[in-house]
Image (tube, rainbow, N blue to C red; front, side):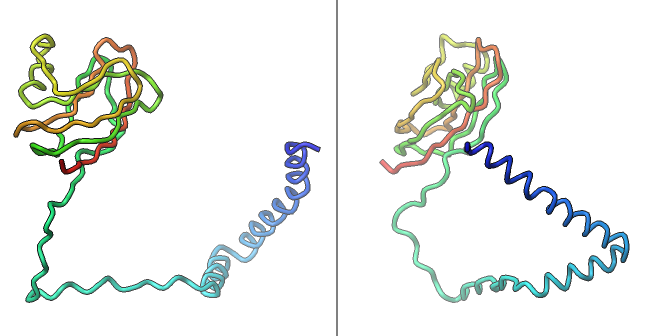
Length: 184
């Protein structure tokens, strides 16, 4: 006997019982009314123990000083997405990254389609948006693959962008980004 035939047999055996239960419930609801049925539901809910809700933690005493962290707190570099990039679109995503910090992680297209990506400062991002591809100089990037690994140190102080580019692509792309900041 195969698994599929045992599933069919199980369904055939239990289907009348399940339909009978549903029919009984609907019949009871129509006979005694929905008000009585809802009262029965409340009685059943009270009989089942509910999880206890714990009160929120107390606020710290404002007179007590909390110690300052000795290392800087790491933050999210950007949202995971997925980012939807229409055909021919250049999508810029502001990165929360500072000079000397390393951005590490990966990018992947949800359906396995190839796409292009770059990390560039604001000046270069604007050049690409204006269509000046020959003048555009990113610090990192890739083209023509469905997924990439990224490990790049931010070299100078500026506003940095992850750029997703579908120039020359025929279909829309959905790109998932998983970047984390690493203190270098």
